[in-house]
Amino acid sequence: MKMGVFGKALAGLACATALLFGQEAPVAKQPKPKSQKEAEAVMAVFNAQDPDARIAAAKDLETKFADTEFKSLARLMVALSYQQKNDPDNMIIAAERTLEADANNYQAMLMIAEALAQRTRENDLDKEEKLARSEKMSNGAIASINAAAKPRPDITDEQWTGAKKDFAAQAHQALGMAAMVRKKYDVAVAEFKTAVEGATQPDPATMVRLGAVYNLAGKPDEAIAMLDKVMAVADLHPTIRQFAQAEKVRATQAKGGAKPAAPASAPAQVEVKK
View (cartoon, rainbow, N blue to C red):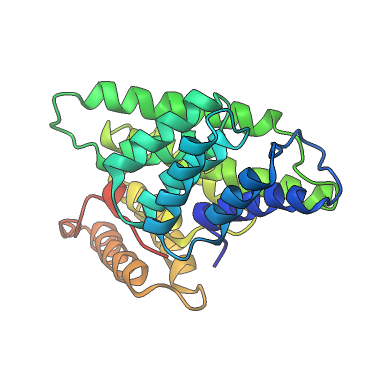
């Protein structure tokens, strides 16, 4: 299974901390420590063994070195750690603080976009406000991803292009989830298709969402074809398989003229931990 947002962010932190040891400067401008003490504080963030330790180390870095060039990176680590702890409220707060330090941080934008789309319900009084912000973050992330420079010279152009495709796919997935909450199923189909077809390795959870929205759009044949692809994935997560099977049953019933079974859960809100 492809590396998730958390793994990619840690890889990015590794790129930055490599500078502490005098390695070749990357293509994109990278932060640099102003002292050995600051370098040690940055390494403490990177070497933390669990989310709570990482949060503490990141906050310690910013407290002791208020002018650190690693501010946005430290705040992103806090956001990712809260995500790892399944604490979306604090994750969003930390991601917003990351954007205060770096307005073009597409990883923070993606976290906010997906969290808002995933947690918004049809009858929420602030539904439109949250979905509009989710869409703004998704579109902002796409723009930032397209403009982003390659972080290191040892990363090939092909590898960097692939990474950008995967990040963009996450943005389109969030746009698809927002469209599902609005019941704009044709829009959701287009966004999920873009996410699935644009990723270097399609996310099975996104493929299930695409199958589900095909069902909602009254396209059972397309749903069955997509869900069969999901269930053919090697080492498929049991939860993803469960939802794929349930959606295929709905599609089969609809195709046969029977009233389809109700979905087990709102597909846009299904979260599969990897």
